[in-house]
Image (cartoon, rainbow, N blue to C red; front, side, top):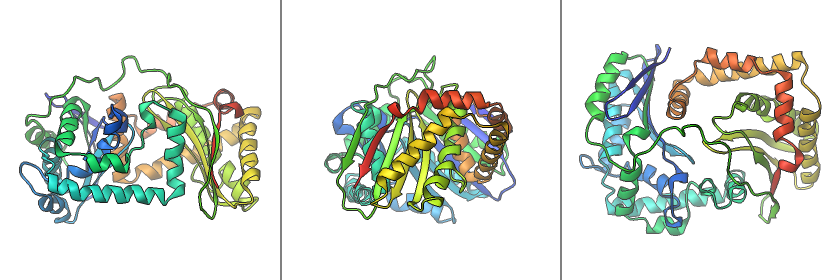
Length: 412
């Protein structure tokens, strides 16, 4: 059972109690790279995620690093296209330590310029790391191509030129305009009393918060998928031992009623299981690759579906054809009731294993509450999965996975 509470300043809390000695806590903020409104800002959301650990009105960088690590916990953060998350894992008795630190770095960061200059080198090395990782870089390049001028095209890391020119004043301005209480959710999973959690949040998150432009957490009504997607078939020359290929197309948004069926369809096609259709067809039957997978990423007003594979240099064309054949099978042939039940059972099991991690659950429910103001229980999600019919799956495949919808990007 999930517990909910909203503080007077608009920060919302979601909590689930378990029996673990470790508590998992985080703050989700509805701000990501798509909130960067000018080319000069690209990369600033991610750079702030790094820089909030570099000094506050109350602490230096050293004290921030040791506040959680010093008691055996772990502190981290990440940025996506639409969210930023700061989170920690620690023994339950250190929950207040985590929450107080979150409040300090989110509301009182001062971005010391000398620390910012050092962090620029760190982020530039992160950009270099991605450039040396074609299996990751290809996703960024694909999104830039398919989204065009839309803010979702922004590379989350930004570029070296921007990073080198970021100033403390720029970071402060962006934070104060965007890190507002109505965009924040505190998510906690652990063996603590909910009443205590609420009191701790009231104590540490009621301090004056940055005031920016009024924002609405949810589109009202939810925005339909109105993004203008580009279509392409592009080959980029890379000095790699493999051919990296990415095939992708538009997909349902976060609020699309077809999302559950499409998620199940993606899992059937290229989920993590060894018996996924793509793994069997391309890896097991032909031995063309080590990695092949599909991913479905829904955004507020858009969505993308990808199929990625790193294949032998002489097998790129044949691998592409095998992938297209599997897509055609889903469009032309309905799953039998037995096949569907097996796919549903598998996916339900995968979700249960994922949610068995307190960290995964804390992040999952925090993001869900941020976007929907409600979180489905595992039982409710299982019910939705079991309600999907063979006809729905085939219709979704025919509507969204037609060959004409796909764009292709090759690294050769």
